[in-house]
Length: 174
Image (cartoon, rainbow, N blue to C red; front, side):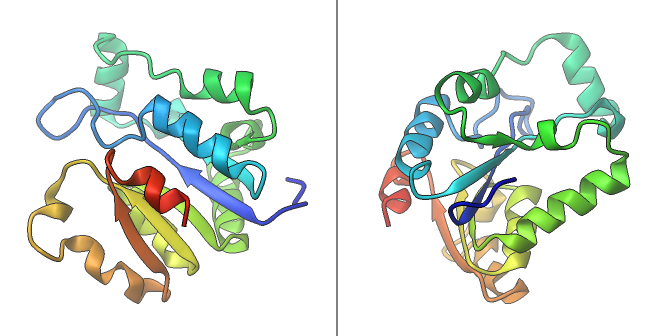
């Protein structure tokens, strides 16, 4: 990855939620497009929504094989409109699983700028300092006045911010 600008890791997901509902805690395509439009001039962005069948568990395989999960279209949109954005899966071609993790964490360790989504993505992005803007539309992390996100700063001193559909763009512009 050529770092002619500060590195930003944008980590997303697209999967069924706990109750079997369609995805809610992924950055919607319209917001993703706007985020990239606003940030690609300022940052070298690596987009992480890595899919590798070697990492699927039974539930993920069942979801994929059922065909019930609507197509997300994020990577196609990125390739078409934002060719400067690096898709992590393209960096991982030909690597074994251990090498993939080493590359992923090396990229994270090189960055101080993260946008992540609720779940494991937000935890991992909080281990590397800097600023982590976490997208969360719904989930147990929001169940009380402080939420699980309130302690994520303890992992590394990262500045943690939480956004949803209504507030994401305001946080991106800061």
